[in-house]
Image (cartoon, rainbow over all chains, first blue to last red; front, side, top):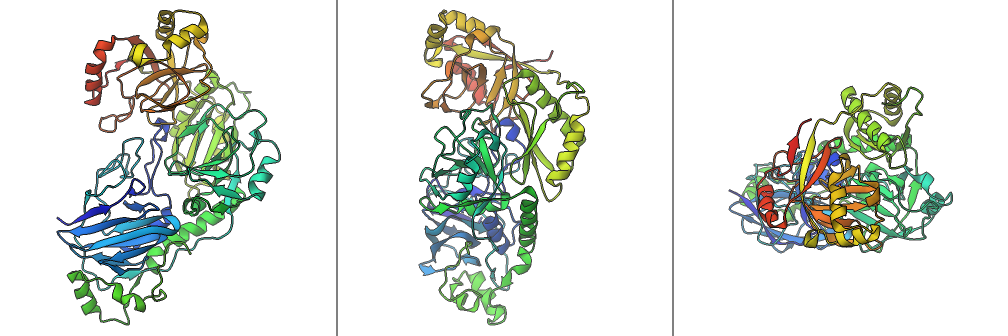
Length: 351
Length: 244
């Protein structure tokens, strides 16, 4: 059986998919990919369903090797230096790690999380329909924790393909992170929303999959910072007594007792997830209708993703020999010049 | 449940894929029971696009797929549902939960007793006499918030939360009581520990206790904890289910 062996990893690298839904009423957070659009892109490149389980590679990088066969993978998300058997390899394309070859992913250069999708997806035993790692809950499969050197993932044998596949970057709006007011904006002093929107916020180092902590001018709640607990969502901007907001992320608690001044819209969660500690962000206030318009456009973009996958070198290269090369597991980075990507570019999911 | 002239709940957007139906803003058992009854009414209505709901003390959080049902039409349907009479939530399950009180199992028992000028035994007796109602499960997996704490035991939360408290902690904070399943930070006062896993990922069912259930506690000697803990880890409920 073909395996992908973990050569190096740290706790910030874990198996994630579209998340665990249906048990928030029991206190179980959804987890799942921090940047779902990048997960979808990586999966599309290896022919998987968009939210299939893949390896979420954290900011520090990781290394993997193929054992007892070759493994087809694709990388999307944060930009980082990647080498296959020592030769640079581009993101946003599929490629084969031949038996005994090692794929080394360096630290993220721009963004935080990358997704290494494996053809046929990560295999495991789902709980509430998900393989996503949730360390606090002891959930996740095949390992209920971040990946460690020595871990081995069972993977599918590679399918014969005429050509490896590439894709242009997914469309992602630039500019401020968009939020919808509430649900507890009335717990704050009237000026607080203006402060949230008009000022810059720096992402604090103590940010993780549970929450992104922001530093800036304090947001004040005249009636105190405790409310009777109610539900949270991914993107809730809760403000504890310090006045410094925390954007709740995939591994958040399902309920909380701090007022939530606003909520980041769904399609900007992935963009926020890729902000690095020390970087500054701004927020913009929009309405529910505008958010729905943006969500529809984003859903259409994702639905169109498989149609935008192109066979790399389908014109310029001899298909039969490329297929032979792939099956033989030869690194396909040699065809980079024939792709839509600039030669030598290390394209990531962040335009 | 709600009187015909009861004020309509507030419907508040939580981003573009969830909304909160807020029935009150305070810790109030009537409000909580209205939330639970409304949760069941929403489930019975089977509204297309609703993905999951999270009942809490004061509000029902509804996660929805905005591409299937938009905020405006979902809001209208929920408000229409809210004016109909709700079927009160009848408690159909009661759990008897074993607790080892005090000592290393409940390091704050003596402090709580001192705070209220009563003996540790009195605290245990009053805690055990309580007939609790699972108001909500949230924050971390299996963390059951209970209403029904004897008001004479109400104790302000610690000024300095502890960074870690043991799994199975039985504690009180303010006027609330709780069963905590996993180890985690807490500013509440630890009265004891239960071997019961309200959440166990390798057991069917994964979650033992649900909102709307009733809970009572009974004391077990510390000497029995290890055996009960092994049974719970092996997948036994350990808590006794009484169907009224």
